[in-house]
Image 1 (cartoon, one colour):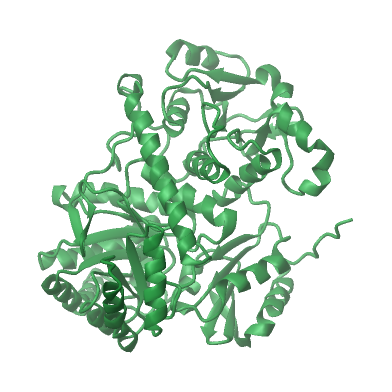
Image 2 (tube, helix red, strand yellow):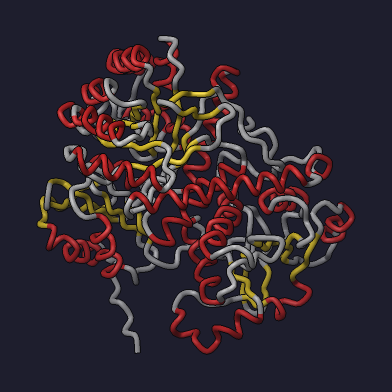
Length: 593
């Protein structure tokens, strides 16, 4: 199966156009950016004002949660208020458990998003064995529940997003396919087959996950499966990493997942989900879209047509496996084989930080280039003779692509992995030229998308972030890319959902309080969820969860199991700390001298 036209040269996936209000998604349209309101849907005026603020910073679609039919009735006033203010931005209703809320929303909005994992199912985490007949009966039940919405959307000219989320798959899917990218894809296809049976095609897909590896694999598998189904299954894709978090971590994780897919030509609309005010999501989304445009332009103008003829990937793009190498030692650091991915830096960076190594904490420089000597080799990946010379060496080396390469970073390293003997290790760079004209945010997003994408494909034994000119920030960025890609866990990992109208507490303040209390823990994964919709299923593989259960009340989870209920919000952070301690994963924070 193939998920894109060319793994080494940018080419945007061709889709049908889906109209959402006055704008087109897919087809020949630009990649659209969108966000979701944090305001309570019951507060019409607040929703109108937040929508207008989003439009002012470049948001092209605005999503609003509609938990119940009664709340969905407020969408009429929200849409009317936005239109009265002179904005034609399409409004999208976000639906989870309530089909009657979707039916009400479809009267007023331009698009409805449904999650096939919980639209007609209540997740019970039950282990059941379905016979083929029993499974078919379940599909007929889903058809009966979903078809009325399809017909209403068809009648009203309303588009629909079939939005699968990792971790919120139905028990039916979980028991047949597992909590896997394949299960995510099959969950969506069940619903689109129902829509197609009514000749309804105003459909957009999404495959969201908080783990970039899972998200990337799911979208790739979906694109490949749609291609297999036939030419008229060319529906647009909406991209997003769900529960990405806040600050630098949220931006890096989003850039890895979204940027990787955009660079392969997948994606027609994007949302960057940050645990911040919604207006902060738009500049990040726009920057990623602009970055992939520049990356694609570079790819198209390169010699990729002749340089990559006949080349094939050295890995399975639908199943993560780290590239196998032989272990080598550079300046006292082991890398390759099963060793951790190392940080490479320049003598200039090392000299700039060597007086502050203690205060840098975990962000330590490791391999310094001038100390590596002949162990690091640069190669023109399109020079067959040069690559063969490396393959003939009697000893293992660390290989990087030379700076005069005309290919994009991702394509060049894919090609290197395909040609290089697997015993040699690979050093990833975030660029092939100096990036002095870029600001720190641009460097962060580009470096995360390029290096993170390759790490999620199992390529890379060491990384070198060179675009960030500030020495300390370059080290921090390198480590945070490894953390967000799930490659090297050196600090607490947070899964924090973006705030929305369903949220039952102040997510930003609470997430910060939890970070302050637990940020020193290594390798512990904590999920902070605003409500039960993003509760145990969405937390997927978190160790502990902090979930809004009711206004002012918190439920605490160990894995997917709720263990403490209705805790007063003021006591919940301390009780989370106590829970981590009870399970043997707590250590006291080091005392800084």
